[in-house]
Image (cartoon, rainbow, N blue to C red):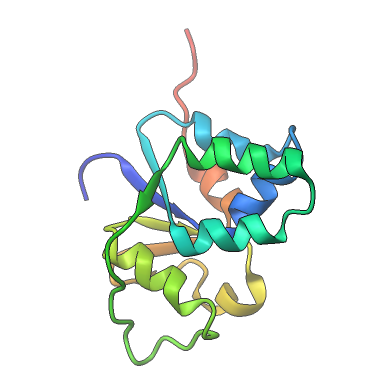
Length: 138
């Protein structure tokens, strides 16, 4: 696929990025030529799990800097087995035309890490950041 990566962020990635001001996941927002996106479902799941007002404010600011997919949900292939609460995440990523889905949910998405489902490559955030090659200055 040509063009920028279209990276869909699961609720746990949003949650972790907003949890503390110095989260390493904030590097995702600094990547050039990467379109970050999520869904209202994922954003709300992250918001309700944050306890402190400062964390919720950080989350709101981060969400304001990405695309919130408003389209429908794609049908998942029959062979994809996911918990009911995780199905809308992958379905929204597919429907939004994401190239990647970043999630830290090893227990539910673990067997899909490194695999593409309907064109969406599922990775841990650290794997994506590690493989994303930033040009060296100078």
